[in-house]
Length: 201
Image (tube, rainbow, N blue to C red; front, side, top):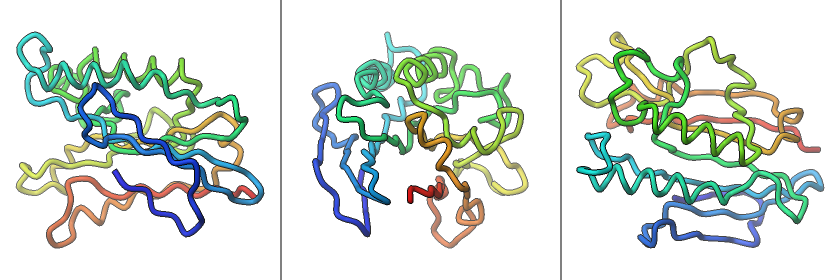
């Protein structure tokens, strides 16, 4: 992962999850409006195709990674606000996927993944800031598969990319943009940019 800032970054932390050394986490502190904000940037393992940890080591790795993520709490002893962003490779809510029923056995929306992610989010004190702006009864997608011939018409998306924050940031969030049009660019990513705006002054 990478974190790019116009403001100086300090107190950089890198946690090696599951003893893999694969650089799936980076955090740093940035100051804005006299407020210190710790930004956690994550890339959760995709988990392969078979949602059974007994026969799929990639899925077992994903579940182990999620368990270790529980140590990342929104409220820190230093009193700073916290934000957690990244490709978490899980669409936890029913309206985070194009068809809840059809994807229950598909990696990224299986019950063990969605339950684990929501449990660690809630117990970690994290607010789902995207859902503060777009209610849970509305669809949100940030990813569309390359396998779809016409991704836009089929619209079989998932919300795999997330923005969480400590509860105090809810009042500072000013807006959210999901750049769906980027999926249609030449040589696009299957993920699109998500932009959250905060007023910290």
